[in-house]
Image 1 (cartoon, rainbow, N blue to C red):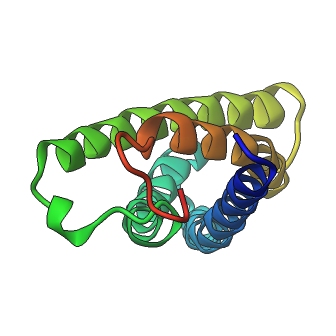
Image 2: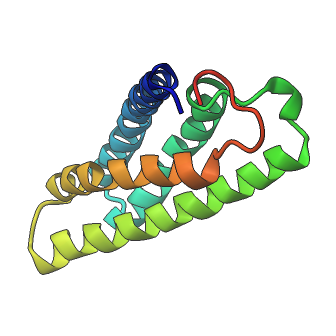
Length: 148
């Protein structure tokens, strides 16, 4: 791999990471606001997290598919799109499981407030979610787009 190709790949990776985190900020805002609202209305914090995470997850799939990892519109009903959708659901189920375990540990075992626990867990899961999304959920097979 030439130095120019290497630099281009590094820039593409950085651009993807920035886009992923911008989408993630929006997902986190949706998730956090819904979580806080549900807590305010008296919902059990683990149930509130599952509902809030689901809302952010839908937004994440749409925006990351179209903008971060640039999947083509004509893939909408292709086997690749269906496989990607299944991987997305599985991966986000894993992230949700980790989130719930960490929330429970911080809240029930360490005695932290639900919202403080949520902030800590969010910081911890961002890098893990990007890595799994890039390497498994939205992995490019065959020719890649410039952003991939």
